[in-house]
Image (cartoon, rainbow, N blue to C red; front, side, top):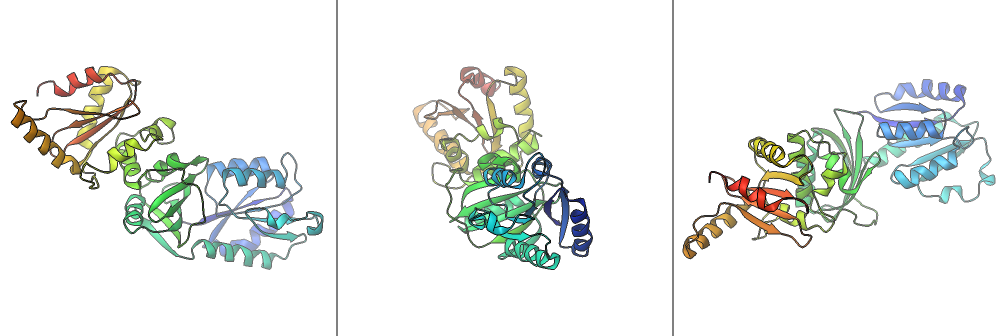
Length: 353
């Protein structure tokens, strides 16, 4: 997938000159033009960019306000300033986070091209891979405990995102205006991506606090059922406390729970929704091969005590939400929210068993 750079300037002559000059690099990057800051912000919402080049003096929203918005919403996005304002009249401008160069007009186009190419090369310093499954790639990064910064471009759309990992732990992610867990969920909804890899991750706060495998499970379940991953409800399937993450990702023996074919669970979700409604608090439903040993132990215990084999198990978490364990080959887990009718769900899950 071709990377994009955004050129923001109300000077139509300059825009036309840059576009003509840069067309010879169309196999390396694509130029998208915006006439001012407002126009640029809309285009940043709609597509993924690797670089922004902006003027300072523009109508409606000037360059400094645009840069301020970029710092807040897209802090990983590098910026090159091209302006008729003398650099000495904008003190300390290059010390502003994200600004990699300041060029005075009239600019040397060849010099600008060198900056663009070097910036794009920096983005791929650790490697470039095409047609990669984001779920498999991120699972590998987690297993190998990689510290890295990964930019992904979805091969099926204009979307793209960036993920930050330290020792295999996902610290943060961004896709458009989505951040943290919501952004990671969106990434795992893509089928194939182009990956730009860097073997480093700048210090940053861990705003995810969940295992990658647990986020993948929720994303795959939602993908099968065609849920909207951009909605906050999907991210709520992974509680901020991380408790659901632990239930999703690891069984009682400390083993990673695998994900197998999920299509057989669609009927159960539809049944529960028909029974209790869309707002019942029914969350993710997925197969969990790693829970087989737990079911076997509970069956043995029930037989010894005269209770019989396990029909349905229920785990109440400290948040007050519940996880139902449903025996089978493999067993399944059903996540619910606080307001979910626990007793009624028991009746539905045990009916006919």
